[in-house]
Each structure stands twice: as structure tokens, then as C-alpha cells.
Image 1 (cartoon, rainbow, N blue to C red):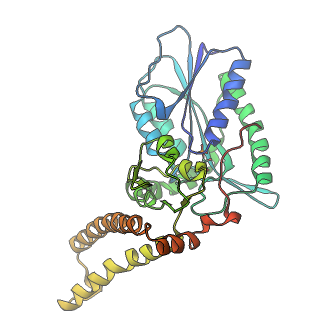
Image 2: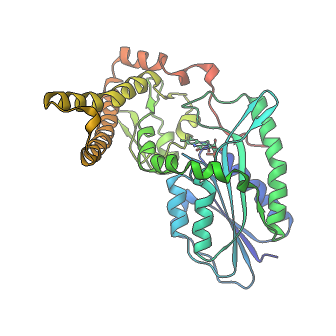
Image 3: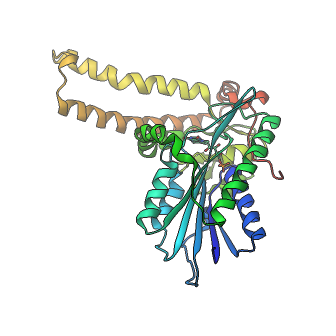
Amino acid sequence: MYSKVFLYYFSGTGNAKRVTEWISENVKTAGIPIEVTNIENCKKVEIEKTEGKKLIGIISPTHGFNVPPLVLYFIFKFPRVKNADFFMANTRAGMKLSKLFLPGLSGLAQILPALVFFLKGFSVKGLQPVDLPSNWISIHPGLKQKVVTSMFERIKMKIDKFSGKMLQGKRSYVALYSLPFDLALIPISIGYFFMGRFMLSKTFVATSKCTSCGLCVKQCPVQALEIKNNRPYWSFDCESCMRCMNNCPSKAIETPHLFITLVWIVLLNLPWMILTWVFEKYGRCNCAILWYEELIYNALQITFMFFFAWGTYYLLYKFMRFKFVDIIVRYSSFTNYKFWRRYKAPKNN
Ligand SMILES: Cc1cc2nc3c(=O)[nH]c(=O)nc-3n(C[C@H](O)[C@H](O)[C@H](O)COP(=O)(O)O)c2cc1C
């Protein structure tokens, strides 16, 4: 059916990489030539002009109900290819409650790449959500090894079935059952792209356990970290893929939960308090806000949020040099405790 298969993947903690490996094995077994490219190392996509039909697959995690920005930019830059089909597989935050496997939520992570490739002239053959363990351990503990293994075993069968269909040129749109939910999540995915991800980039900190080995800096897919004064510092470029935190050999990278809670209490209250104060001073009532006042208020609040997140994070980073701050941050971070665990996709399954 296909003269060659091209797989492009990005993976923060290994889930999407494992899925790519499974699909590659199936392509090789089918005797079809294959090229696998890691998106984070790919400067330019070049697809040779050969006879026959090509199959292009993108495998990516879901971040903020969308593909991560790194993948999104890659998809937009992807060249038009004649006589080519396309499929998308997005790994999501699967969970397990007792015996029940719970799916993640894709939002735009399938619809948007499918639409972009469709507009570029590709025939969209498959959309496959892949529910593997959630790696977002800033907000929940890493799953137990037993649960992780059972999720991988279950998903491997689904991927074998899906890739079998793709290689035979059949269609498979498993994802479409959740289309109403995915469409409803679009406002959140837009908010995540323009705001949320920048806020999240300031939720990592290295404690005194850090040995300045530089692994986090070296492994960062978007070069968002640099070592300043012997400790890594996260810039707004960070995409929160969780690789640094989960791979740190000293487990020195934490999400400072107490600090974040305090920052958010101020963030959510301070702009409103200032506005109320201004209205009271000038004898206006809150209920009669004019549309342009609301617009100005929202613009000011967003600007304030960026500066506040950046400023407080910078101060935290500076103050972490003091032992007592380091201790407070460490012990008020859930990620510091053993029961919270780290997450990395298992190597052999
Ligand atoms: C910052 C962040 C945002 C995430 N957003 C979503 C999401 O919107 N929906 C979802 O189902 N999973 C979400 N996840 C979970 C990951 O998509 C999931 O764990 C994925 O399998 C990780 O793949 P990887 O190991 O290849 O990076 C998110 C994870 C992170 C770290």
C-alpha cells in the first residue's frame, strides 16, 4: 500500500516515544521502509520525491488540550507532500481507578493537526488517542508501577490494531466519539497556549539537592533552562514536558506547591482589590463597569500576571540560596515526598 512511512514524534517522558517504537516495529514487520524523526532535533523536513504513496504519522503528547507548541510549530511548517496520507496519535493522561481505565482529554490535540494536514492536501486516515500514564506530576502523584505496566499492556494492543489498519490504508477515527468534549475544551486550549504554559514554566525549582550536573539543561527539548549560580533556572520557553523533573538523578527538581498557592492567592485577588479601590476612590459602582474599562482591566491583569509570575519566581530563585528558604520550599512541595513518585515510561514492554 505505501512505498515509505515517515514517523515524527516528540516525547517528554517517553510515552509517545514508546508508541512510535511500537508502530515502527509493525511497519518493519510489514516490510515497508521507514524513517523515524524526533521533532526536537528536526530543523527542516525533507521528504524525497519517490514513486508511490507515503504515510506520514505524528505522535505527540497532549499539553493543555492541544499538542505542545514545539509540535504545533512543526506541523505548521510541514511541507505539502504529493500522494501522501496522514495519521495522528496523541498520548494523553490516562488514569486507573480500581479496575476502571479512565481516558485523558484531547481538546485540539487531534482536530488541529488533522485540519492543518488536510488543508495541506493530505488525506487524513487515522486519529488515535493513546491513554498512557499521566506524567504531569506537578499536579498529582506518579502512578504505581503495577498500574503503569497494566496501562502499557492494554494500549500496546490498541496501537497494534491501529497501525495495522493504517498500513492497510484503512481509516480509523476512534477519537471522534469525544468530539463534543474536545470542541468544548477549545477555549481552555487557547488560554493554555497564550497564558497557561508561561505560568507553568515558572513552577519548577531546583533545591539544595542539585549537584549542577547540567543534565536537565542538556536534555531540555526547547533549551529553556540555563545554569545560573550553580542552579538551573527555567525561562518562559519551558513547555513543561516534565523531562527535567522526572530525569533528575538527584531528584532535586520540585514543584514548590506552597509558593505557587501563595502567588495565586495574590494573583487572583490583588488586581481586583486595586480596581475596587480605584472605583471607591472615584465614587463609581462596580456594577456599572463600561466595556472599555473591562477591556483595560483584563489587559492590565494579564500583563500584571506575567510580571508577577516572573518577578516572584525570580525572587524565589534568588532566595533559595538561603538554607531556611530551601528547607521551607522542599518540605512544602508534594513532589519532595517519596509517595508522590516521579514518572518515566518503562523501557521494555
Ligand atoms: C503540562 C502538561 C499538560 C498536559 N495536558 C494534558 C491534557 O490536556 N490532556 C491530557 O489528556 N493529558 C495531558 N497531559 C498528560 C500527558 O499528555 C501524558 O502524560 C502523555 O502521555 C505524556 O507523554 P510523553 O511521556 O511522551 O511526554 C499533560 C501533561 C503535562 C506535563
